[in-house]
Amino acid sequence: MNKKEKKTGLFALYREDPVAADKLVWGREVNPLTRRGFLHKSSLLAMSSVVGAAIPFAEAMPGGLIPAALANESKAFAIKGKQGLTFLNDRPINAETPPHLLDDDFTPARYFFVRNNGIPPTVAAIGSVDKWLLEISGESCERPQRLTLAELKKQFQHYTYALTLECAGNGRSEFYPPTKGNQWTTGAVGCAKWTGVRLKDVLNFCGIKKDAVYIGYYGADSHLSGTPGKAAISRGVPIAKALEDESLIAWGFNGEDIPHQNGFPLRLVTAGWPASTSGKWLNKLVIRNKVHDGEKMQGQSYRVPCKPVAPGSPVPDEAMCIIESMPVKSIITYPESGVTHSLNKAFQFRGKAWAGDLEVAGMAVSIDFGASWHPARLEKPVNRLAWQKWHAEVRFPQTGYYEVWAKATDSQGKSQPTIVPGWNPKGYLNNACHRIAVQVV
Ligand SMILES: Nc1nc2c(c(=O)[nH]1)N[C@H]1C(S)=C(S)[C@@H](COP(=O)(O)O)O[C@H]1N2
Ligand SMILES: [Mo]
Image (cartoon, rainbow, N blue to C red; front, side):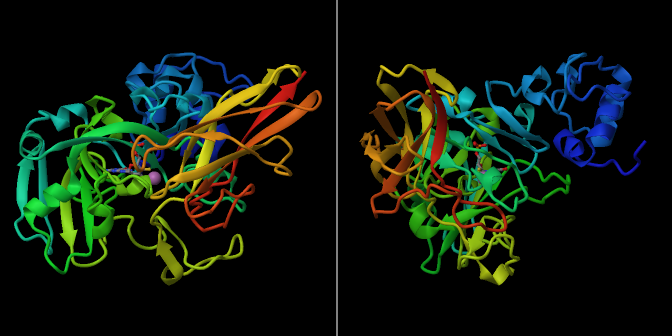
């Protein structure tokens, strides 16, 4: 067996060598079309050792089901409290929300996407919520503190805002040439009602020195390598963003505890910016006198070329700029793509739109591949940085196959592109129009 204890997830293994992966999983070659077989205890063991104990919930993996290629049909890849998500990776766990499951005004816990860079702390390791410690320090912090979650709740005023979180890599799967990383389609986004204290109230309590420029977060998850003390991710935002009313240190999610995979018991929420700035399992904040230099703040991570580049070109680190506010975007949440619709009825559809730090000012729809656009009805956000509901009605001129497109425009007049925008080495910020297929009969 592989002595190196290769720490690859099952998805990576299947990508590298699907035949070998199947052999490991099933103990023999299997029919690639059906992949039906019987999962032997010994195969499970072999598989575990190759993937380096990376199979979450291996105990629950039922025999005769398909572990990776068809993971989304398999209970083996269930995340407790989640439902209907599409898995993109198992080590670390990454799962997105299909468009039609984003139809709720506020995304329920079970549908909220999961993007992990490392291994989350176990519920047992998290222990007592009240005693969860948040340290606030850093060279630009006047009075470093350690506050328990109970103290945080007691000492500061509580606020609830609906806040949209979108992963900067959402839409990556459409870039060509392809870029590495989770191949998100449209579902690395959600909007929930977050409850907590204002980050600015806590920062002011600890004293922000005059030279402060940035804040950084640390969480209780561990690096995939298992290296103690090495953060899986540690990002942050400039002081001005940190001091906004809607920047929260949150413990509540739609009136309940934050789901375990989404950062229970405490997380930072800095909506409108890449969700990577919203630290989960938050246990430390630092006030910095320079741009925070934590894990995934440097190099090419969460950065795009400062100036547009030709698709596929290498870009030196110095020519990459940190992503700040996310671009305007929208999604059609009802009906599902692929519906059949009758010609003599109006076609009613709806969705959500958001625009980073800005508001969405207009929403348009097209049934002729963008040749003509019709206005949709757009609602105001319930508060700043919450996504906005929209709905529209169209009539089709004749039977046949149609694509229904949706396009949002932000308060500064910028619209979503109809085709994939600026290629960049890491595949961030694809805000191209969402489209669904409709068969009119
Ligand atoms: N501690 C910690 N915080 C984190 C991450 C992480 O891996 N660890 N992932 C970040 C990224 S890249 C994203 S897109 C969001 C995802 O939040 P969610 O899993 O709650 O949807 O959390 C961010 N905060
Ligand atoms: Mo992300």
